[in-house]
Length: 635
Image (cartoon, rainbow, N blue to C red; front, side, top):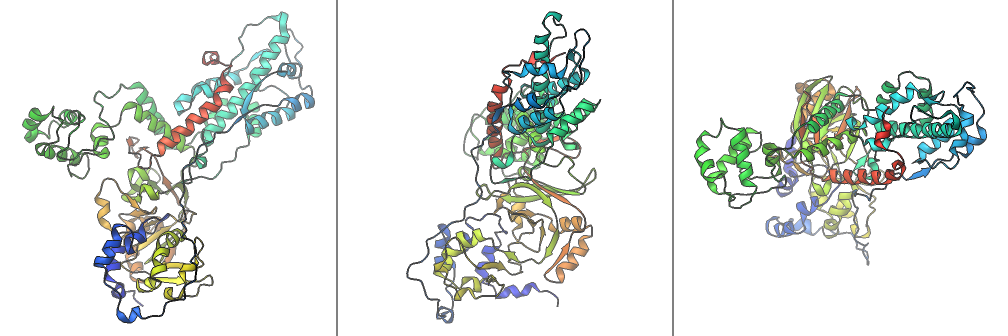
């Protein structure tokens, strides 16, 4: 049977109009307050919602409990107080007991690992717990030097120390990996002291190399400790095997560098970091948080006008007299509004004449210091993702409000998206696309049922029946909403609620699924006007697509015509037969396909949380590097 959207005529016109403003949320706050009551909308309900028919009002209501269950709320994710990995003292006790002589260099000036073990007595080497354990385990089973030959640091050690010294090119702090290298000259009269120095160098370098490798693969911070919005799988690392490989390879540099992300985006960010560090500071810096409407004033306005006059000389002809006369004015008068609108249009923004962070960011850019920070954060975040991002893939960058379909080196599709509002943030994670649902049902999350539906259901248990929703019990049986005593439930409701397919459905005509615990997916939306805005954080957490048919066709490797035909056939699903990773990412600095890095506003203020986590990590690591000097890492 051909599916017909005309069946929505049975829906309340008022409910249909309100539903158009919402999508299927990951975390819900305010949706049903807006639809059915709460605050300002309660007044709208009283004044605008027509009362139910008299016959409907006579429907018997379920018996109320004497004492209703307490009103409950299901809370969404939160930000945590970050706790960095503590350092522990490396226990060399087992090493000293189990080590057996492996090699003796009895020639003049020679030394052996066994003879050098005495140098560990009283040695206070601190490292992360897993690194400390790996050191003890490796050397107990392999009691021999990796970084020492004869009585000097060997070529393998030289390569390792040089790589550690280049850590800043990857956005890392060289001080975290600093090692005191034994001088090439030493006294034959005090070989015991030389052996002690070499043994301590051996252990310190191994500890710092392991830290470097771990940081390169996983990042310096654990993103899942930052907030509940961060969700990344662990990346196992066999550190004992790392040391085994280093003990036998002649390619120390390439091996150590192989642990960094191996993709073009990471390399583009490294190039950007190098370019920024070599550049001078912006000569005109405008407050990135400036927000100015016509009629208001700010000392930042003359700076912005100066930038427009400098950067768009060919476009200000008709406004040159105004800029000359009012260029030093702090008052945003009506005569200056067309100048700002012209500049907004030139940089691809909606020419509304309102000066906000997006306008400032596009016209003035961000300061050098801010851009450096954003790139450093992006390099760290890249380590949370797979080294190989995969192809094809879908990449959603929340601060940019865009989603792209990328195949090989080609961005075949790019579109605007709407993401979660700051109170209902979209999470940062990656997954794999599984299917496309046509004319979808919307399964209402428990958080919405509890937080937003339940208060209304306690007053009006039948409103779901009237509004195009189905209620089912734990066995999948449909239950009239009006027959349930909602007052007896708090945070745990034994029913499921879903909205049937229709033009009023919050998901629009299709959704693209990559099942995850956050209940986030990509989907259509009836509310198209939001895509025209520059800042598009309006959803409850899911990602609304401006061109859902195009994205569906891309992931299914088919045509838009095929998608259109499927939509005509009613509710159905189609599996994605290829492996397509999807990144629901959050980067305030991100390279375009041509390698040019673009910068975006921090819509959820997550960079600040990441900065705090990095600072706490550095604070913990500082005591372990006090004994070494950056200058001592040079050969």
